[in-house]
Picture 1: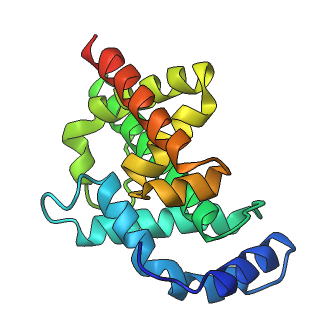
Picture 2 (picture 1 turned 120 degrees about the horizontal axis):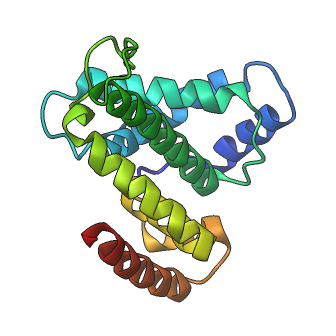
Length: 187
């Protein structure tokens, strides 16, 4: 992740949690580039024309984050929460697209008014979300490790800091989670 002054980010996150007006507006310029990087990972690593799509995903996730004061401890935790928000935006979008394919009849609204590259992968996104849900039932921490590492692009040290565990534990959890998901997605 790009170096972002952690004390300033943490101060603004706590100010937002405490209801200070404008805290999220001050935070966004500090974290915007990293949020775009995370969004790009969620959208498949930049395959295809994704500039507007990445921006739309960042903005939709930002609206969700800004709309509810979350108890975010620090910078690493914030990016974990942001990554989760992005995943939820994409899953909601995939469900709408899936419903349309099944004859839902309703007009789907997209994040940017244009179809995301996700259209072709809606079933994959839903399958992964279901598998992550099953993993979370078995072991919530393993599911969080997947969200932070795979979707958020966080390294082992950042995940360990966000979860309050050792690097070794994150590495072990990452191996277990990947093995679980491979089996689940193969079925």
